[in-house]
Image (cartoon, rainbow, N blue to C red; front, side, top):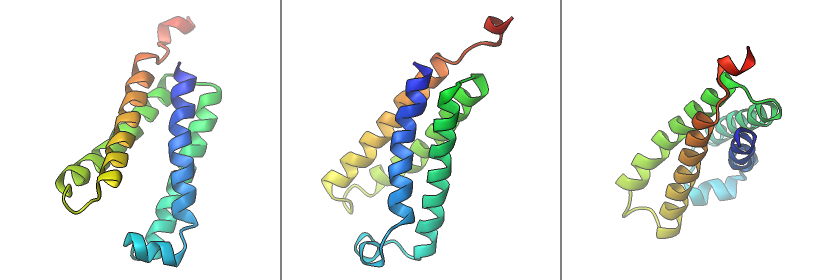
Length: 123
């Protein structure tokens, strides 16, 4: 189960990171992303996090599971307040997508914590 949590989370971060990294100026102006270098830096960071999750999912361990949970919960903490506060400014599909993404990340964080291998099992 822990391996599935890593892979599912990587499936969220890798496409999002690649989208932001290769964001075209036309799409950036439509979405309202400015400056463009910030989107590229964020995309690179998300791709690196997704690659870490894939590598950690090959051989999951306790510290990796808690890193997965911590990263997911920090992302949820960054997504939920704007989605709730900007309810009128965001379109309904965007708000639903943000809250759904936060829900998936919360579930994989909980799954990662609950299925983390204990140190006693290695003895």
